[in-house]
Structure formats: structure tokens, C-alpha cells
Length: 107
Image (cartoon, rainbow, N blue to C red; front, top):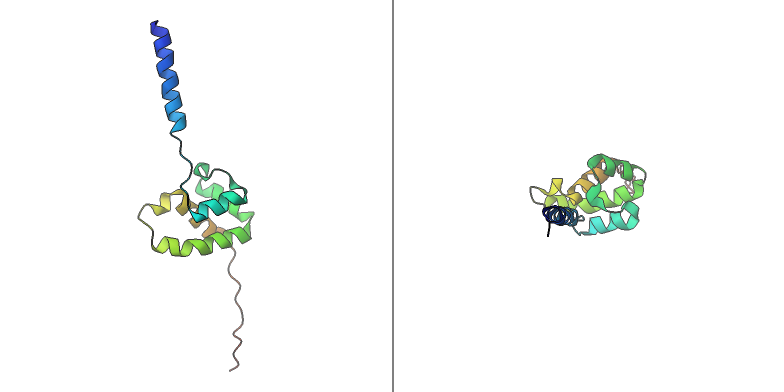
């Protein structure tokens, strides 16, 4: 085998390893909900991309933000930098405020 063909083979193996090492976002109810609603592979999204996507879907942003409250309270230190954490923070920032209802009690 020539030296050139060995070099090409090594280069192809390295490229294949690098391209296969790209992992999809971790599985969680939040990730599944957002992907099911048309976001695609969330591992490619940035905070800005999430906010832009959620701003076009305010009802979904509110739903995701409501799901994320309990998750944030019991999360690990690096949760905010995970795909789920980034999605949750973006949804919380872009979700419309919850409607206040009048107190039905009479004073």
C-alpha cells in the first residue's frame, strides 16, 4: 500500500470519527416537546436562535417555561449550559407574561 493511500485512509477515518461524534441534544420532556413542534435538532441552536424561534411561538414558549421551573430548581451546576437549560432560559425570556385574574372574593 502506498504512503498516499495510507494518508488518505487515515484522513477519512479521522473525518468519519469527527462527524460521528456530533451528538444530538440529550433526551428530556422539554427537548422532545420542542423538537416535536418543529425545531429540528436542538444541539445546533444558540441562545439567540432559541429566543428567535420561541418568539414566533409564544404559547409554546409559555408551556416550556412552565415545564422548566421545577427542572431549574433541581438542576446541576452545568444545566444552564446544556441544550435543555439553554432552551428553558430562552423560553422563559420570550414567553408572554401569565394573565392575571381578578380575585373572585368580595371584600
